[in-house]
Length: 304
Image 1 (spheres, rainbow, N blue to C red):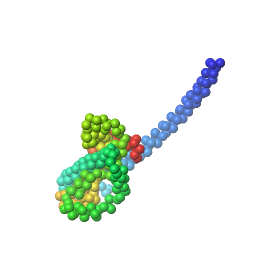
Image 2: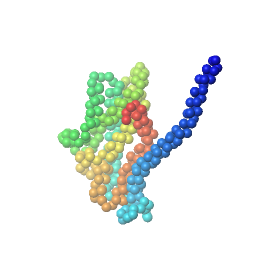
Image 3: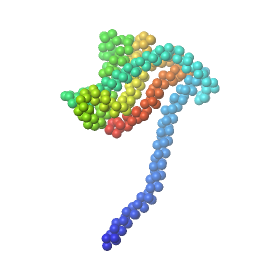
Image 4: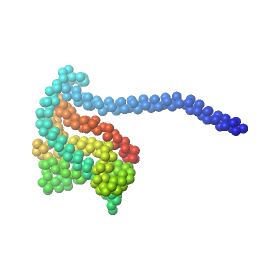
């Protein structure tokens, strides 16, 4: 009787296994179809992103008359590599390029270090009103930048900072609200047992942050660096407001005057523009691994 009962119990299991085997080819076809749809959508998205870049490259290598030929051609009849030399000499390109590098690097360092320190304080140090400070940082993200444009201009002018790089650099050392939010969320996802172990060995808060948490937070730090450098590199509004001397201009401001002065020389403009976006492309490809890890860790922690 026990054997019969065990056989009866096995019969439904075998039947369900056969049913699953019958359904598996259908599921496999659904998965293949879904992957195919995803691949097609990603390819369409990639083409829409790559086509403008390819068009910039082909325009940069054409003569100015060939740019306006109809129908347009993707491959130039003759490659004009001299456009990259001529395009950069029209606006004193390398001088303003160096200005942009200096401002972007210092601003990036200031934003990342200050935001990490503030995020650590809010996430790890228990002090009265820390939740209120966090909400103030989040609330400041809701305000458009134009709200404080006139008051900040009066402040910097009264300090004698007008027509200097200081309004573009100094505010970066007071933290970026978005980066503070990212750092706080990331630190909350790290166990506090690491902090307690370091403090038992006599480490201070600064040592815990620098030697323990920051090496563990490399993906989010790289993500901040990419965002901060991109924001400072492409910033046009602040240099337009505060910089009058052409020797202090950034590359974004100089490129805008290039289009107004040489609007018909699109081949030269595209050649200079390719060099303009080159640092951002190099930075992204060098730090792509950590950037994707940072986004993935934030996604796993519930931050979309």
